[in-house]
Length: 321
Length: 171
Image (cartoon, each protein chain N blue to C red):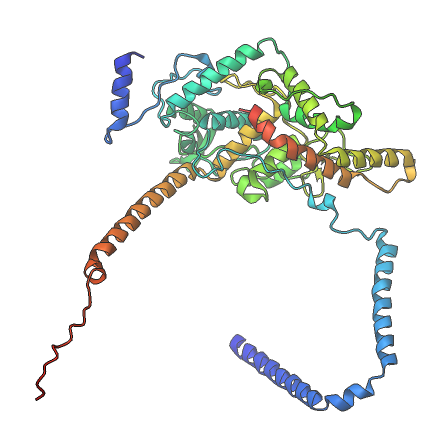
């Protein structure tokens, strides 16, 4: 039935196209007499009327809505500055000390509102924490067990295979606790936002002391130039000295932001270090193979390249047969 | 770690069948994870980043020595950008922008302040923003303008200039 409808519609469309085509042909054939019939006055009237309609629609819109501004910079948000992230260079890895600090910032600051639901404890082992640290961290939280004999689901301490716990039971609870705003999950946030690391770093450190003069900030919102619309529900959270780094790094706002952004980048692409190493391997292997192929080609073509074609004419003999 | 330990470590690292283990961070309390104060830290199966970590620690030690007399933490980004914001308010005094950038925060602020004062990059944006603020605050209640766009231009210019310097200061 669907196919038949589709066929029918294409048939009608084809006939319409045919008609238009023929019409175009016919008008083209009678172009000379038709163009002469159009008077310049009528054309001028049409153009003037179209312009009047366009201007009138703008005026009507302005009358209705008060302002005719669109695509203002505030709607777009300030474009994040590009920062020279070391880990984004081709042959550089994550700074795992920074990841460790960033994870500390996430746990102590971000985790009260933002989940990191795609990162299991086992992923932290060897990159950020040691096995024992990760196990101890997992055991701090309780997780559901399999149903027991009575079908009851009990709680057990977490294991390395468990995922980091969410701060809220579900999105509705998160919205309810945050004045209607849903704190996004941070697992893939670096990949999920235009500008990635730069955007998040700018957002975290970009809260001005007070919004610029005349800027309207909605109720319960905060002014942040980097957030599209400039009104963000998240208030500034990073303040100097908020976290005590275990390695003694001075915990300035931008230091914490840098560390947590690098950590979030790791969360979004934990395979980056391996990926770059694999890329290096690919480069090594392909360059070796290419070099071999060049030599092999040289060897195989040697007979052809070094041959000499000589025309050796028969000796001119005096006697003709 | 003795001399022969270092040699055997190097040999172990060179042999392809060896497993690479990071040093157990057991000694210093600074290495303890915040979550697991009670757990023993035996072997860390992290990637072999001992030299890097050692270098980091040395740097930290130096930094700590330098910053011992500093109680407050000053956010370098803010000071950098404030230096730009403050540009128009202060009369420029030419000073050398020396290599003592990462030593102390006060010095950092002062040096960057003068450095940014001397840079004329953000002067137009700052000028426009100030003018807009004066206009908007002067207009009173029947004001319909906002200074968001001017603020954007100024913030863009300031962060643009501060970004590389900030990364020199941050760890």
